Amino acid sequence: MKRSKTPISKATTYKEIAEFWDTHSLADFWDQTQAATFQVNIQSEVIYYPLAQGLAMQIRKMAKRQGVRPETLLNIWVQEKLQKA
Image (tube, rainbow, N blue to C red; front, side, top):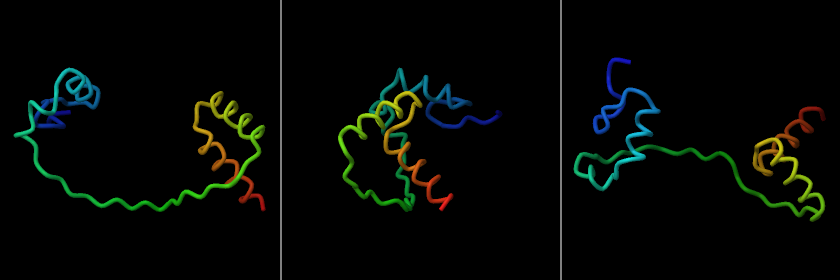
């Protein structure tokens, strides 16, 4: 990559950016920053459904084994079930 990704760190890769900020404070570079504007489009809604405690514990264990959050695992399962319906 020819150009730096950020003018402050002069890094050319995301790894270099991470390493730079691991050892530096934004407070030291605050005068070099500029305001940013962006839009966020959140399309999901959190809805809670009661779940038996035993089931919840099993889901937590399985999610941990798979390296995902329980909410993610449940969303995957529900999507799969609905696609089959």
